[in-house]
Length: 380
Image (cartoon, rainbow, N blue to C red; front, side, top):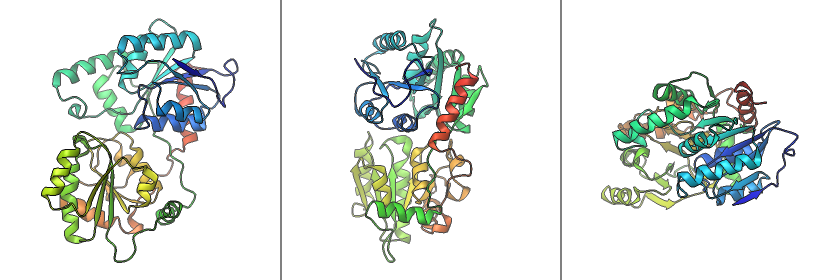
């Protein structure tokens, strides 16, 4: 167990403490949200993050955030995780325990029972289609009952999109006090998508597509079935009929790597499709023209938000929170490969590329809204 108290925030006695519970060690998914809040701080609060030892813990320490890293998470087991969290609550005496992701939600509900500590949750990954996360119907029904029970006992509930909030109400019901706080991103100072694109390319020492070059299409997604990458391959094959020099980068790792590689070979696209594994998002986007994401479901996609702020063209399915980020012209039906290809071509034009919606929160505004939600839940 490691407790790091090096923090830029105020001493424990000066401000209330929020103990954020995160069951992952890596820098994917919800870790981005946690890091962003840690970097800007929770105004008026001291933030402590409980997570397994690993890259996330190290990144948070570098940001000056207090980190508590016991044996915790799915690999540790539920009993060990609940015990570790209870010990942290006794040692740190937080004013609120804020859980992120399903495993942390369940663990925190058990660990805080009878403690008098307020319980908060942010829902980052719920889908209207249960099969996205649970293949067996009995498992989805059982988990719905578990989450419905712990959700009823939660003092502060946050959703990252209106679509997420609606799904929470439909599946778990029991309450209507759910605050929507989208993932905050800092709006680029350069303004237009074209200027943002030029700035990102310059920073990464790359250049936008030159006249005569083919479109550079990018997917930044886990290689898994819910990302519908076979649909993207079919759309890319259509795109190659329109733009024979187009290229596709499928950046990411996952269980579907071998089937995707086989599909690329079968479609005769090996000279145009690259599967490089994980790529750092900023540099990957600097070397692309259009990002495509044909997911079955998204809640509030950081990939889409980053692509928009980088000035890329964006094509995505109209699922979950995507229509809250993107205009209608960017939204497509995954099963229509020709329509997807045409949308990609349209996004080559800077004038058709999306910008962040007006009023979208910055990282600091997101953190301030979280604190406001704490106050409405009874935390001071």
